[in-house]
Length: 78
Image (cartoon, rainbow, N blue to C red; front, side, top):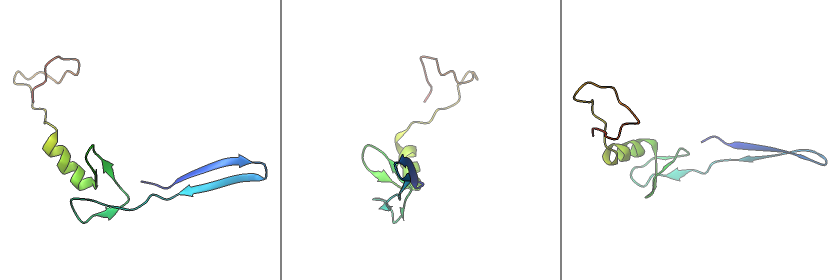
């Protein structure tokens, strides 16, 4: 996460403010840093978030008939 900067015009010139992201600790590993990915349960580091996705999101498999993926189709092969 990058620091965000806000610039506002004021009566005596330009006012600037900088917001620094706070550091957090991942609940599953020893990662300490600024990058955080949020699920409905917790805030994870990038590696633990990838592991969470692999465990909880089904993977699409190729169509047995060889047809390309159609997002408007009513059926999806998992």
